[in-house]
Length: 114
View 1 (cartoon, rainbow, N blue to C red):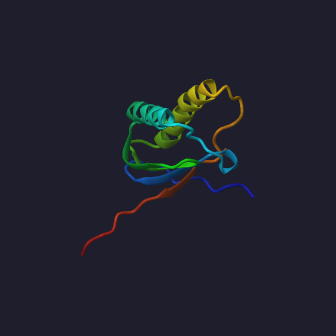
View 2 (cartoon, one colour):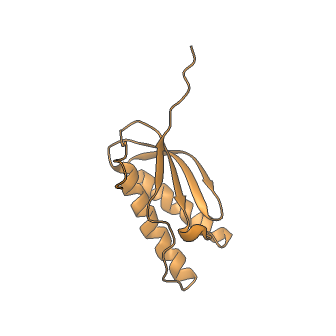
C-alpha cells in the first residue's frame, strides 16, 4: 500500500523523527552530535525552517520544525542527510546507509487556552 501524501503546510509545526538504519547508532562520538547540529542549523536557515526543539538520541533524532513554505522540511532534511552522512561515513570509513529511508513526520498542534 502506498504511503499517504504528507501534510506540508507553511506555518504548521511538524514533529520530525529520523531513525538510524536498522535502528543502529547514527552518532558514535560527541563530534558527531556537533556536526549534525551544524548541518541542521545551516539547512534550516537555507530552506526556511524554524527549529524550535531537538533531541539527539544515539540511534534517532526528534525535531520540532515549522516551515516557512511548502516542501521546506523535506529539502531541509535532504540537505542535513547529504552533509551529515557524508562526513560521518568519511570519519568512520563507512559506505553503508545511515538513516532509514522514510523520515516520519506528524503535524504538531498547540493547545488552545480558552
